[in-house]
Amino acid sequence: RVLAAHANMSKVMTRRLLRACVVADIFQEVGRTRGDVDDDDRQYANTAMGDALREDHHSQMRYLINVHVEDMGPPSMKLWNTLRNDAVIPFQLAHNCTQTKQGFYEYFKRNPDRLVQFSKALLSIDALGTGALVHDYPWGARCSTVIDIAGGPGSFLA
Image (cartoon, rainbow, N blue to C red; front, side, top):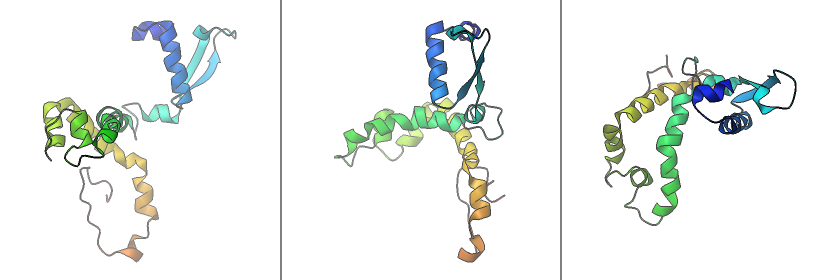
């Protein structure tokens, strides 16, 4: 009830959203206030995945997930429409960009808020296991020089 009121949502829609988040391993049900079966009495807590979606989490994934859902998801739905036409690029079709190689950059120029989110998403890629790659890969046995050319802050090699 409290969450529904705070989010300005109906109790039914709030309940559905919370249950979907439990299935997605974002929340877990931790108990009920009165011990009966009334859905209004259920209590939820973050899981490790839910914690990683918080903006203040040390390895937060919020922006990376948002970019995949909001910016890269729509083009994946357009892929089928472009399979037989090399001149059409799914990203540009999905986001109404000109059919040039500059379409990706045009999109971010028109949507500076999306560019900010994309930039933050690049920073969160390190949380996907870059540390393990740096420490576990046999770099010395396979190469003598490594050049990190990317859009992140350089923490891959730091």
